[in-house]
Each structure stands twice: as structure tokens, then as C-alpha cells.
Length: 361
Ligand code: IPM
Ligand code: MG
Image (cartoon, rainbow, N blue to C red; front, side, top):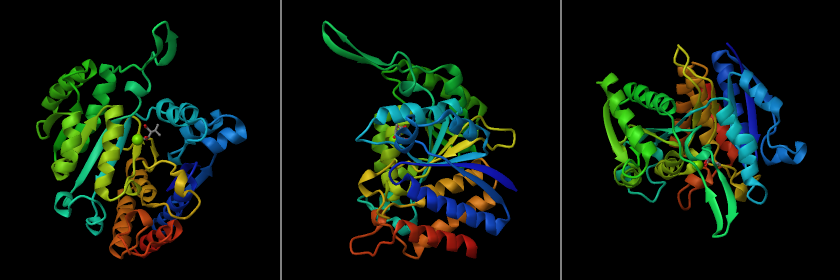
């Protein structure tokens, strides 16, 4: 089959890790007989510098017409980070309707000792966090700062409509149904009206999913349970800001944020696939950019998610995931997941190891 993929490496380590994701995608094409037509473009600080805008309108249009987007990271902490998010990342999410952010957290047996948590706490951790991505505090209006007689003030708005809550809860229930049939809906219903509405709606929707066990948990309690007994979670569904924070926390379980992939999906099609943007959740990591130290596995695992969720190629997705597992078992480690004294490989060496494993099947 033929697919058009828009490739947006972005800033910092983005282009380095995306290059490895692309090589793995091409290895999949070769082994399974697919053609991936790749179009690269600039977004983020690099685009801002060249075009005076962090994402050109034609970039967004090309992305809209593609089958999927492979994205690295954008941002420039020394420059106008907020402007880059406003012009590039947020329009990609919101204008393309990518409301469902899937962030799986899986502990690979080979990395059980790669974190500061005890291995027995990490055993069997395999969860999917579903984060609402186009609403809540990130987009709610009013959103501004002003001066008053009492000094400077600022406001952000936490608003959710029934429609926004319903469609994301549905993604959570459907995913749980296809997994271990346990959904945890996370809110702050003891304080926030949006959460009261969220909790009511989750309870109502549970009637349509009698096969799924629904737990409703406050976000503070969830943040504790995530490191106390993470294997107890299957699918978590939550609003934008809570999901942002909980997924950084959860990524520690997998050994490094360098292991954490994501999919940002639009409305599901009839066949269950959806248009999507695929990105590692780690960000630009400017401190290690250009040194070959970045872990490309989060991007490579994002490519696997692309194959599964947007391109409808589950066999191919599994081949990539198996390849990642194999290279970890063989002992390949980038610096972020290497144990003390263990030799680390470069970004490109890790990518090549996965390419080879995909090729060998
Ligand atoms: C993420 C990131 C972004 C977010 C930042 C870079 C704006 O932290 O994708 O989790 O908060 O959504
Ligand atoms: Mg984040």
C-alpha cells in the first residue's frame, strides 16, 4: 500500500530521533511491501527563524491531506517558547481535530532495573493514558494577563462541553474494552465543576460498557497510586492538564521519558483507524541536542503507533514493537537507560539496531 506521511522534525533532538523513526518506517516498507511517501518540513524555532512564523499555513494544509504526521519536538527555551506552541504545536492539535492523546506506558523486562523504583513495583506495568488534548485550560477563553489597581492579574479558563467529554470518554471505554477491561477516569470532582460533569458522564457511559470496570479517582490520589502500584492501571482517561502532568510522571516507570511514545488522534473512522500525529513525549532536550545521545525509541514506538492507529497495519506495528523489545534484550542502551558502567550506544546505533531487527523479522 501507499501512504503519504508528513515529517516534522522540529527543534533540539527532534530531527535526530525522527531520522531514526523514518529509517525504521522505511525498513517496514521494505519488509512488508509498502511505500511511504515522505514530505519533510520545518516547524518550531527553525521555522520561526527562516519564515518568521513557527508553522506556515501550507505546512498545516499538507499535514491535513496526509495519512499521518510524524513529529519530533518544538520549542526554544532561550527564545519565544509560548509563541512556538501557539503557532505550531497547538494549531496542529486543534485545527486538525486531534482530541485524543494516547500515551502508553509499558515496562520492558530488560529495563526493570533502569529506574529508581523497585523492580517488584514495576513488574507487569502496561497502561494506556488517554489525555484530552484540544480543550481545557490550554484553549479556554478568556486567557490573558492584565494590570489593575491591585497589581498584575492573570486568568486561564477551564471549560469543557458535554460533546468534548463524551468523545474522549468513549475513546477510553473502547480502548479498555480491547484490553484488560478496566478504565480509570481521573478528575478533581471535589473541587472543579468541569470534573463534576466529567464524573457524571463517565458514570452514565459505563451503562453502555457493562463489560468494562470503571473506577473514578481524584487526580492527586492517582498521582500517588501511579508510583505506589502502577500495575493496577489498565486505561486511564483524563482531561488535558491532568494528562500532561500524569504522563510525565508515568513515563518514569518505563525507565526514561525517552521510552514514551504518543499518538494524537482525530475522530475514529468506521474501520477503527483515525487520522493522527505521532510524537515522542520527551520534547527538544536542548542540553543533549546534536550529540547523538538522544534515545530514538520513543519516536520508533510512535511509528509503531502510527502503523496501528492511522494506517491500519497492526502486523507491521507489532514487528516494530518486537524489534524494540529484541534490541533491549540484546543490551542496546542509550545513555538515558544505561545502568552505571554499562556501555551506551548512540542515537543512530540504536536506530540501526531496530532497523536490523525489523529486517530480520
Ligand atoms: C506535552 C508537552 C506540551 C503540552 C508542551 C510542550 C506545551 O508538555 O506534549 O506533554 O503541555 O501539551
Ligand atoms: Mg507534557
